[in-house]
Length: 133
Image (tube, rainbow, N blue to C red; front, side):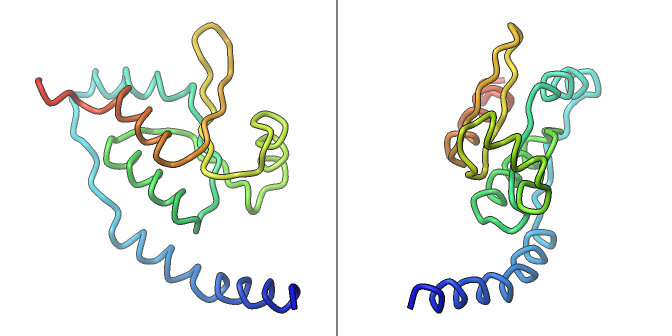
C-alpha cells in the first residue's frame, strides 16, 4: 500500500509542478524602488545570505516572493536538482528541509534558518523599509 501512496503523490506533484511554477511567474510581485546607493548597501549585505530551496515548493515560493517584494538579491541554491547543494544543506544545516536561509554573520559564524515564516520575519526586520520613515 505504501508504494502505491508514494506513486500517487509523486504523480500529483509531477502534474501540478508546471502549473505552480507558471502561476508563480505570472503573479510575481513588484519589488521596492530604492535609491541606488541604498540598494547597493542592501545588495552588499545580502551577499552573506543564501536560500536553499526547491523551485515548486509552496513554502519556498512564499519566501522567494517576499524576497522579491523587498528587492533582495539573495543567492538561490536548488537542492532538489543539484546534489552538491543538497549535500551542503545537509552538512551545514543538519537537515534536508527547505526553505533554509544560510546566514553568514560578520564575525564568520554561520546560522541556518528553517521555516518560511521565520525567514520572512528575519528578512522583514532586517531589510524592509520602516513604516515611520
